[in-house]
Length: 250
Image (cartoon, rainbow, N blue to C red; front, side, top):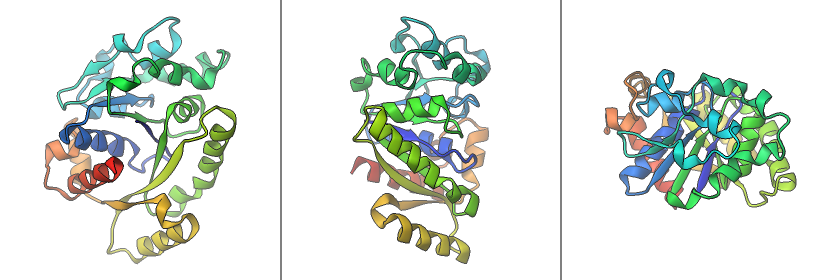
């Protein structure tokens, strides 16, 4: 199954969710490939890989004619495989702008290898550009991380419009979506009010039951370039991501 983590708003826990769900799934015996589609390369770094030392990345794969994904995939010490990124990927929207079927390049790349893993998880950039469209076109499911706040939720309408366009125009009619609440603090009345509003507007079925609680262990684990559960498997966020992975399995 191919899942994209997408929200054009940055700082909502997109990378954390991608890496930590992947790690939890791998600990449950599932094979996982992480695809870093963000020029910031945070998924690459969070998985313990130094992006500045890479000379073969997903940018080369996307732009080099005849390149094969299997030649660009590397293993990580956390039990997951990785298609890494670095800052070169920032040029991808311009480089691919004139390409034939430019929104479907990633799908074509993943097609020969997609059955080699139980889950392929794509970390998207914080925008709705060509890289994000490629991810959505290649995916069977989109997980939308949202932290309870006005600006985080404000852009959901536009994202749903883009996903609708992908369903109708880019030959991916079966793509599904689900919202993941991150950085949640049950002590904040505002968070509860926003949650109630989201359920009322979207419906409970569109929102994961699991909420990722606010937890400083996430930041500390990122500094150490580790999945949160590897850093501290008993912390709140690690427990929550483990539960979320079980929801994904269901």
